Every structure is written in C-alpha cells, then in structure tokens.
Image (cartoon, rainbow, N blue to C red; front, side, top):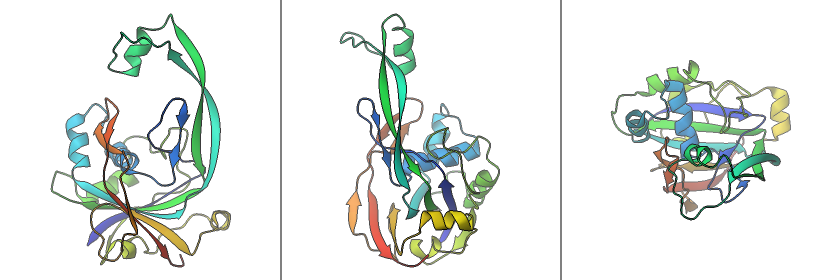
Length: 240
C-alpha cells in the first residue's frame, strides 16, 4: 500500500470531543475532524467551501499511532452566553450573539489540553476525487493556511516531516524511520514499549481489540455539524 505519513508534536494540543455545557474535553489522539482540518488548511480550503471540504472528506482515510497521549492539563476561560429564550431559534452562535447583545451573561468555560503529546498519522486515498498523496504531501510541507493542533493556541512543536512510503500494512507504514523530535523532548515524553493504534477501514497487519464510534466525521464545517463513524483500536507492544 502507498501511504502518506507525518508526525504531530506540540507542547499543547486539543482534540475536541462532543462538549456539553461549559466543559470542553479533549480526546487523547487526533480524530477525523482534526486531521481533515489539518489537510484542508494545508490545501487552502476555506470552511465555507462545502463542495471541496466534502470531496476531501470522502477521499481519505486516517490511521494514528499514539506514541504519547501527553499529560492532561486544564485551563479556564470566561465566555459570554445569552440568557435562554425557548421561543428563539438561531442558525449559528454568531446570529444568537448578534440578537442577544442586551442580555448576555458570563460563565467560566473549562478546557482540556494534551501537553507534550506525540502522534504519527497515516493518510490513504480511497477514491480519485482530485487530490493525490503527492498533493497532500506538498500541502503539509508548504501549507496555505496556518496549521495547529486542534486550537489556534496550540502551534506545532516540531516539523510534520511528511513522506510517502510503500508498506504492507498500517503498522509497518507508521513505524518507518522519521526525523524525531529533539532528543531532550524524547526523554521528557518517556515513549512506552506499548503504543496505541487507531484506524479507519481495514488493516492487514493489525487486529482490532475494540471498536469505537466517535462523533467526529464532518458533515458541515460552516454549520459545525458532525456525525458518528467507525474507528478500530489496538494496543501493540513494540519498542519505538
């Protein structure tokens, strides 16, 4: 198989999961929405470019090798929210705020981040929708928009170092030699003997230990709508 492999490391990352109320949790690894956003930013696709956003989403599958989930840290934000109005219906938060400027309250929002997380990501093309792995590799090397790890406050802490490899399966592809993070950072990370793999579709060299259904498959970037998807998971003992 041919697969595009790159690495993600940063002092802070936030991989959003479904949020209720003022609590904004983070997954321990980047999900489909975050990875699609990374590719779309590299390609220069805007959020309101629904046609190309959907074309990209329908043409790629992801696999993630989690070398380190990072340490969970939390911070607090003050957020303005309108008073509840059962009769009002708004299409977006921007619209709700515009029509509610005279009745705003302030609440504290708690947000989770992953500190010193380290992941490898594999991308495969599932159909010929206009982008090749070579196109995506160039987009990650020379991105049109700024790339970040889930939130704009979470910049990359190391080069993505994208490369296209030939491999017999996902585990082999995600275990190729790559430019690692700084040696001091590797000691901080304390890379384990056992690592977690998460993937979509089939993996000939990995056997799923459980199946998950995260709600992070993009329906609309502009309306901020998502749906569930199927994700396989396995923990594998290996030495990185």
